[in-house]
Length: 218
Ligand SMILES: C[S@@+](CC[C@H](N)C(=O)[O-])C[C@H]1O[C@@H](n2cnc3c(N)ncnc32)[C@H](O)[C@@H]1O
Image 1 (spheres, rainbow, N blue to C red):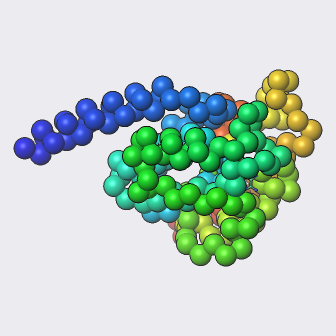
Image 2: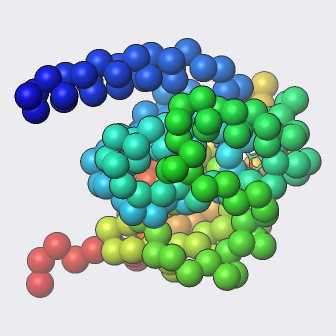
């Protein structure tokens, strides 16, 4: 009996993932959204946070993984209004974000925090297992997000940054003098934080927010 139910579940999931891959999110995250999905499936986080939601690509991939895990919540922080870092034609993304979350039945797994991260960060109380930072991409903005949220990350938790390869793999179509993510994440790396970078979709870097990494043996 169990195997019938799990086959039915697998069938339903493959249909959902097919729809998810077909959905247009106007996002630069590309297939790297699967990195977020895979981390969530593997690590079974209770609390995920994202800074920068736009139309919800990262939120849907994280949310689908939480739904499959049957536990955890994503707190998705974005004012959904004009900032210095909206993609073209992506100013008020609130309605399309809600629609995407709703279409994939993720309402129980994604909590919308319609605000700026610097307003939310100072009163943040929950321990965070995974945080995805993809909001204000200026040096000051990304550094502020790190300072506000990384102290709340649990042991073995992860901070994931998008757009970390803009300096060494520049794409002239999207060049911006005020892009500060690569410089900030490079500073973390050179100050001893473990950083693993994937050379895909403008760079995705995983950072363990413990200088020198976590001791594996005494
Ligand atoms: C590149 S988009 C995010 C893309 C999204 N993660 C995805 O998977 O498609 C950047 C988003 O960051 C948001 N943003 C900019 N500054 C922010 C801040 N200080 N706090 C929260 N969100 C911010 C913008 O409103 C915009 O929707």
